[in-house]
Amino acid sequence: LTAEGQVKLCDLGLAKSTGSLEQSLTQEGLTVGTPYFMSPEQIRGDKDVDIRADLYSLGATLHFLVTGKHPYEGKSAAETMSLHLNQPVPDPRRQLPGLNEDLSLVIMKLMAKDRGQRYQTPAELLEDLKRLQTGSTPALARQHAARANVMRTQRLVVKKDTPKWPVAAAI
Image (cartoon, rainbow, N blue to C red; front, side, top):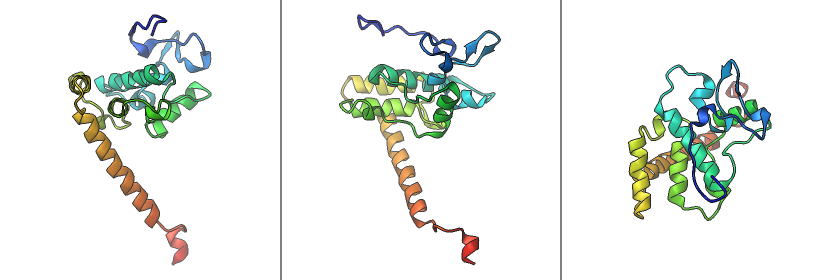
């Protein structure tokens, strides 16, 4: 994003940070990517990485453009990558409380840890973005958010009902 507000987009998978050498893994003989924008499957080194990894990176980029902060910021490249793998997808509204809820949900769907839960194609994303532009609800992002809330509730119920001591010790 230039000082004049013009958006310029490039392939961020090969970007090299000019501000922080610790946050760049792009170097001669080793092209891994930029930890701030890498998808979990890229970080794990999965062999079947596809367009959904790019959609994740786009979500991380949008998060940064909207909030001015990376979704995950560790003290090193390794820590940042670990956060991408292990921390819940951050809600951009925590950084920017006035952000439109639906835009936030689109970003969060783009960054779903499970690529099966992300937009499967750029066309799906475009469908939700067009809906946002016309003031309609982004259906796919809303469905994802509802599914995530159900899963979060189920995990809380399981944790609440789980004994605080090992089962073997109770026998």
